[in-house]
Image 1: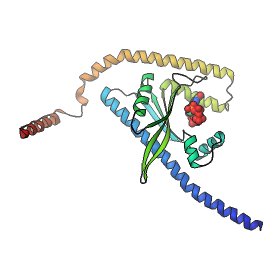
Image 2 (image 1 turned 135 degrees about the vertical axis):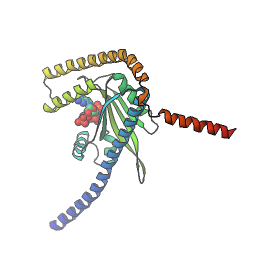
Image 3 (image 1 turned 30 degrees about the vertical axis):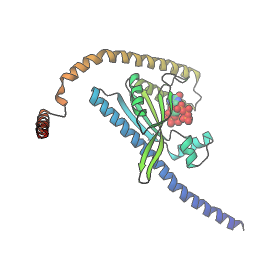
Image 4 (image 1 turned 90 degrees about the horizontal axis):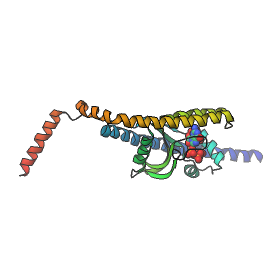
Length: 252
Ligand code: 0O2
């Protein structure tokens, strides 16, 4: 009798494993596509900005999708129901994109450009630059939803975008390492040092912004006179001019 019950449980578990493996792998794939979608948006913004202003506001971009193991740890920590729908709603950083900018003004510029797009739904914005965390952590966090176009139609997927300066990023990476090394119980002398380092990073950001705005005018003058990089060369312009004139003559 007990053996038959055990057989039944094993069969149920096998069916569960089969179902779950298929739906979980589709779930993970949607997050990977959502990261690709956001990366495409960020690359377009960067290229267009470079084209219009001859200046790159983005230093580097990294991305990751949480591992299934790390998702499950967060599910347990948050006491979220272990269903895919509930995980989708509760764990908002399964897909993450981190954008590092040179200057504070650029972080807000990129945030605005990204979140004002028609197909981006803002779920939450956390401005830890204006209101840093008690430990000194600074960054802009945007929890957004983007459509991922699959063969069956569009699926809305949540992505956490973190935007910060190089100085903020440097600080956050070190703090993250220290936090994990001490399992969250950072000794007070180290948290004091980290607070001071956060203040120094802030000073650096402000000073670099000043230097940048001082030198920016001169840089623009130089780049305007160097129009050799223009993709539309004189031959193409002359052809366009001819075509336009011919079209005008035909209209008359
Ligand atoms: P990991 O390993 O970077 O992914 P949440 O737990 O995300 O639901 P929370 O903490 O209110 O809720 O979200 P918040 O404040 O938006 O933080 C989410 C992420 O921001 C963190 O993800 C970190 O990446 C980063 N972050 C937030 N606070 C700090 C901080 O004090 N120091 C550093 N170095 N990073 C921070 P994870 O999942 O905690 O970590």
